[in-house]
Image (cartoon, rainbow, N blue to C red; front, side, top):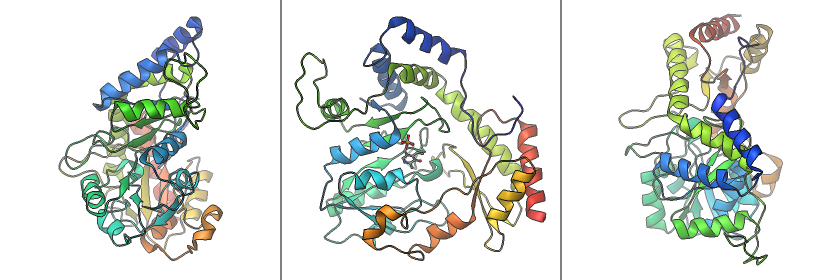
Length: 371
Ligand SMILES: Cc1ncc(COP(=O)(O)O)c(C=O)c1O
């Protein structure tokens, strides 16, 4: 049903089909030319030297954690208001996540917020551009330089985001992970990308992605521990088609976000997501409004569902999840992030929602809020 309003939807077309067919007909389904082409075209779009495609955003982050050199004994600061993969990637290497509260407007960790918990035991910072809003990487780079910390950026939600200095997320020289799950700005079904600091690091990561093997696969030599975190050429074919249309995909999402904001502006029950100021550009991954504390957010979700509109409590803080129990965090530790988690409501959002559909969602949301 073309007109159904869904929470998210990938934008796929004839070009994706054409390139998938090209891969199928070539018989080169893995480590083939399409994978290389995707990496090259993605790197070119981003304006970087190298990019390594992976099986998911999570595996890109995991390879990033290893490449930055974090392991057992390291303690890395990050926001608890994130998708759980950001913190899980640290646990995979025995790194302790050290959570710190976020800025109430952008919902990102700030360099000042991170600095407040930095002591002699902290060895790194993992900034996350939540909901596609740029975090202050310049500030994090300064903090990292001053305190001798490692830096890895989780840009999974921020492909196309531009920061205050006018730089695309991922292009500053800090290793950055992106994710291509089907609800993202661009998709490969499942997939991710890691941007290394330089080609040499890229080659090491490429080898680790492939069980520690050499780039030319000439022998079964394995230079060290590795993983199978490869992206298939079928997924890469979708990626190539999506990169070709990426500017268009991003613009379509921005159009929908602008429509939502124009229609919702002025409703005092809602805090709307901020657009960037100056050179900053939010890349629209989701459209999340925050309801005032008195409103029962979960009740609104239920009423919306009854009116045929899907919505989601997005996203929960991760610090109280069971895998982090040993670090002793509790509800109440991060009041700003926790309030955002209680009040946040993700509305249906993707680039092919038309004006009438956005109007319908807004009208139903007002009904659900009035009830
Ligand atoms: C902030 C963040 N980090 C990491 C990931 C992990 O990406 P994937 O689901 O592709 O493994 C996601 C996915 O949504 C994410 O939002």
